[in-house]
Image (cartoon, rainbow, N blue to C red; front, top):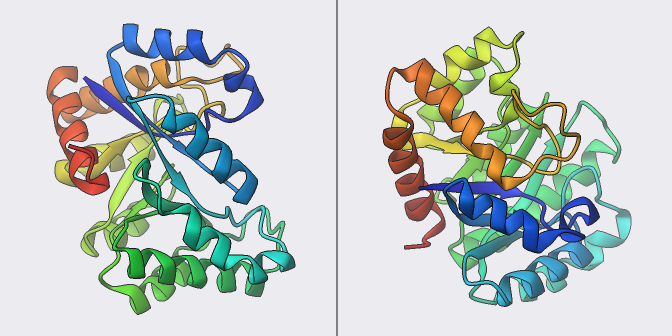
Length: 254
């Protein structure tokens, strides 16, 4: 049993074939899926989708690559969107200094606002962090009681250590299977097992041996899990049990 803890089922590439996507996930042993919102409209779509599927839950937030100046005045809308029971977390939120599609001060302002919402609601957060570990951890210092997962980790050993030492979870996606990523595989083998999650980030980042499929999907999380299990010298079943337990505990989805 596996949980894909981060994908984007509302993306047209997946939503247009959703019954087949969900069927293939179940056939692969992926019994639960968490779909992630990226802006307020996408958040609403994620909530509506999960309301109609007992094996789906969501996180809602504003992705740093999509924040706009108008979002500063729409924070109360997000506070309302986290109310439904299908919403397990706030996010995807954070800082992206790789693409810098939004001004960094604006990214930081919306990140802080979303952390405050999560703290008030007692919900965990899903962090997007690209080339911004120092600032991300510094901002999280102000919200020490907020639980977080650093999704789609592709950083360094030192960064992973700093994140894990703070008690945060680390999510691994398709890149851990790519041939050139020996260091990332070593990191996935070293992260404490009770702080590890597996994800697809579908429809992005298809893992080996499925990279020829341009559209990633939740069923493919099995390949990411298998690679990490191999690196840790445990069975896929053991890895699945551990990451499922971690996800259930972190997201409060028993």
